[in-house]
Image (cartoon, rainbow, N blue to C red; front, side, top):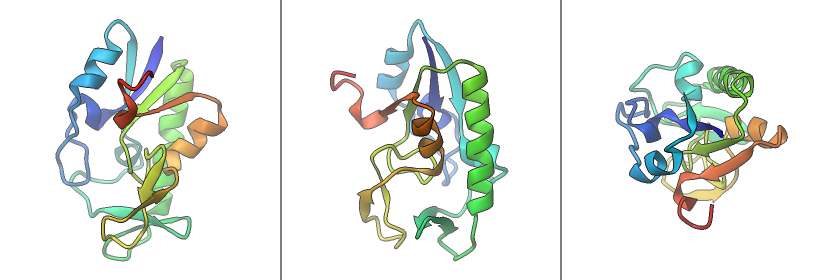
Amino acid sequence: MVIAVSACLLGENCKYDGGNNLSEKVRAYCEGHEVIPICPEVMGGLPTPRIPAEIVNGIVINKEGRIVDREFRSGAEAAFRKITEAGAEACILQSRSPSCGVKEVYDGSFTGKKIPGMGVFVRMVKDAGIRLIDVEDLGEDV
């Protein structure tokens, strides 16, 4: 099976703060499968590290008030092309990210409050019918 995975979960330092979200659960789950690492934010031209961003009324804005929606959407399109060309059947994605959040995202207040919702990239993947897995759900009968 071909699985697309948020690159930060594979140990790539591409998070907004310059770090990663390395997950041994993800590595174990992906053993024996073809893995396509993706980071829509980096693919959209955003630097690492970068100012944190959240979705506010459907638009991605960083904590300084700068609209970064174009970069997020451009990166989502590039990541989507990459995974569909590779034949990805599933995506394991980082929780709460404005790109990759599967079930919830931050509410746009930059206070850590979470709300039900999906990241920009996730909406494209869902519309294409590719299986979505929130990293926090790995091991829960995935």
